[in-house]
Length: 266
Image (tube, rainbow, N blue to C red):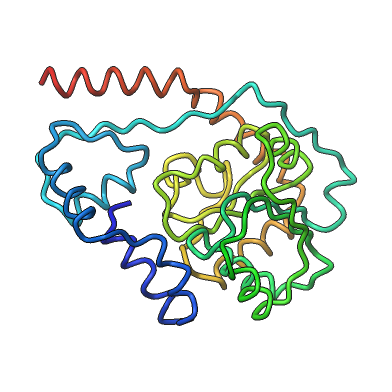
């Protein structure tokens, strides 16, 4: 996502919670670096992007003459697939969040949503590293029960997906988010926002669900709808897995080669 759009995304969150500004500082680079990025984009003949959202963010803020090549990143379709059981669909909804544990990924939005849902209806697992100071800020504001695993290896993450029933990833700003196709490859559906790869990989209600970024009420309503329709999770998870069967790294390389060759040839 172009840095100007990133700034536009973060500012409303800071207006709601001024304490979040400190956690967004790591996303800001010196102006000379940002100017250099814009110069490189304007001089480019071909710009390779992983999502349509990234392309739109560039075109919105910068006049470029380059040809765009859309090359979505790959997923490991050889990953073992979750085996659903009838018993799983009876107890609490098993949710997992994977990524850096900070506000850019929308973790505070998830906690806000869950604070309005009875705790006995869900179990939440967090995988990743906390941004310094954010856990304290978050848990003081939203007393949500969760299991934190810390960082995991790729194999361990896929195993964690299979123990879960849905990946919840309410990110505010992503160029792609590899955790989305990774979870889909493991056979579980995803709840994410329109500012991730979900806009290109997920048909709402078919392979997962899309909600507006930064909207805790919309996220809560979607989680509640999933809870109320638990029987559909295996079907949605299977549809998510089918997407990743063509979304391989070989497909990425093929699209990249063909797209760049075509653009340069034209």
